[in-house]
Image (cartoon, rainbow, N blue to C red; front, side):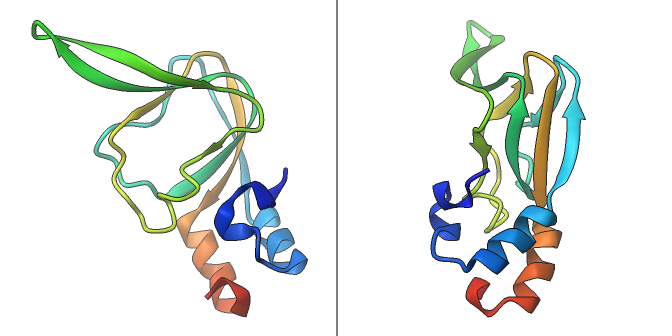
Length: 121
């Protein structure tokens, strides 16, 4: 995975990037399971290793709420790389359309690395 794809990480030292990568946890999600839902605090960044995740919003189609798919994300896609740094609130749904294997960096793990690495300050 290339951390340089993430604007905030591109200026970091290789040691810091490695520390962030080693702080990531591998997770799997079943098809149909949400990774994030609307109005949820974004507390982790996710890199998809395999599978398909749909990014969608709900809209009122004559009071029958339906989802509008904005994007389908696959291997190599990075979810919430900006929002998790500031613990933003999600306004979209991220739902697995196939089984998904991914790596997650939690805000708490990021904070631990920040205390050790000056270039993350």
